[in-house]
Image 1 (spheres, rainbow, N blue to C red):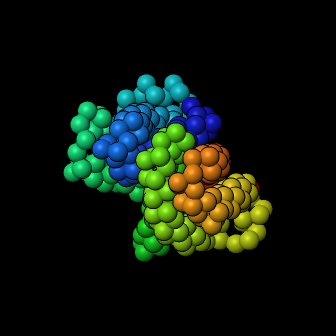
Image 2 (image 1 turned 90 degrees about the vertical axis):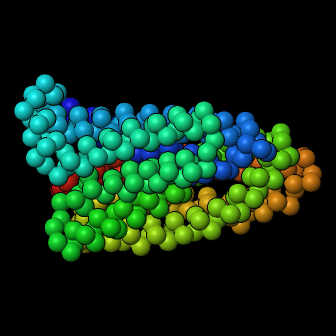
Image 3 (image 1 turned 180 degrees about the vertical axis):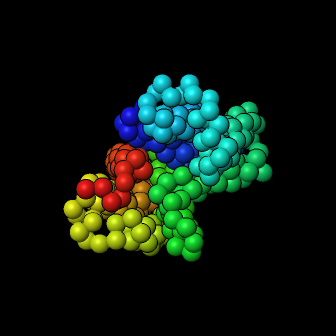
Length: 305
């Protein structure tokens, strides 16, 4: 396994986490009594994302072990596996994360068969634990003492806030697709978009605050941000994040109020829905690109030159 393999595995894992977390945490957006088709789509998305989480977790672990052993052939080295899984904090964390990923898949399959609010809450908690525990598998895990605790806490908050934003986008897009032909779905989409703006604002504030802390620990100076490969990828991530903010702000102050004003007019409603669909799709593309940058950062040394 090369660094490329590790980056690809991390990318798959992160995207799947966003899908699974969002489908569970925002599954109520597709209320079965109003929008059974959207509810079924959300359930399928949760199962699909959970499969990806489990697959991605195995892939990241395998890529890491191969890197430690010097190549893919080392994956057949049982002693190396035993050392990594049993004798290192990294291995123990990944064993716990694999078990959580399996539980997440079982919960998602159960929800796809029968809706249950307690089960959905449990699935959301498991997904949130998986998201937050990413902070125990990256650069933040290498620091000791109070500084290490602060860095891991900031990293966990950063990842949770990111998934809170990104995870909502597929759910909102499913609602908007239904809203193009269904007045009830349009009302639901307008309601959920309005509610999400508050959640999104909180997520952005946490992202900015925790991002400042993380950048201080990982880069430490303007020279490190501009003059190292790690800093340059981080700048790319920040630029993509800024573009997401622009789209989100335009939705908040333009497209969403337009949809709410046009709910009683089918022609204008469809136009407003199409605009929102285009912008949410744009946010998804940018969000996936951010996750790609994050996957790259996870495979790079912060002090690389």
